Image 1 (tube, rainbow, N blue to C red):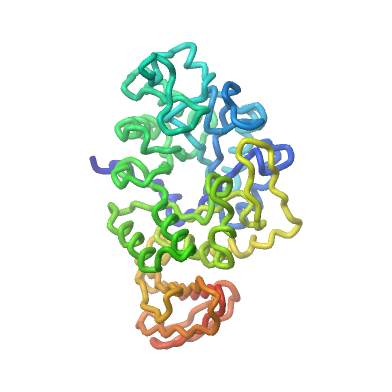
Image 2: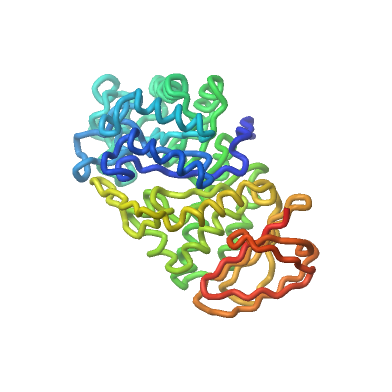
Length: 419
């Protein structure tokens, strides 16, 4: 099944920002978050991904507030966040600013007290004794039965509701691989008739690119984690990137140093990557994919946010990394990075990554030191290096010849851009 769904033009070179409404502000509402939109636009964000906006089941709830991913209705708003008109107001302002908004869609399972459990209990998987069941070890949800045609129809109608009613711009599909691909194919066909949407899958099955525009780079993330624990080399990281380069044309991967799951369960980017967290963020924004920034990373956020309870991000008056993210997210929009080729360069150091991104005459050179070693000399010899380059972080201009030597300090990242 080939992908018959061209990606919406506005997704080229776009960056995504994941919003945890509950923890974003003391109020934890759409209205309170909405005040941050101009700042996020200025930072270079293009797509806002909202974690599930639907009401949360009370039965078998985890913690005091429960998981966003255990819904009690697909077509209602979580009352903690406000009302439908607050959500519409958020989308309208985002659109006025030129931002797009996608919502998290949890199609594999519902919470235990979703109204379908009473109205259509035959829409759910059952165990041998005829009880609701779940096969991934999440005790607060129950699995839907995708062999049921009526359930599929209702699920697609629920997705269409948000497109028609609120003018959303797409979906981030939770654990997409647990739902049959032919369902997603039907869902996209029918939702795209209302409006062309952007589709992100939380999965790493290459065939899901037949329907989805972007899929998660889980394998890349896991190998980078292993690398920082000393259990893999940069060659293993390059191997995964090579594998991704063999994906169907126009497929993109979502790169991130953290997200809601990673932050809460595996630790912040500083726990995972230490002093190399910023160099890793530069990498996510310069690879051939789509970079994701999670709520509070620009702060920066050094704490694991609780998942089932209120745990507000403590915003600082001065967002220390606003300019850093602005630099890399704007760089990501350049043609060389957004749609250019990638060419890896050899380095004589096991913890330094070096590569070009290039489109026509535009060239970006990326040099990243993931170690505490200082004064590392890296020689770059290539015709693409010739010309006037700007260091994107200092804005200083340099005239390079085709053979230059660069010096990297501990955890330093150097990015040069020739336009």
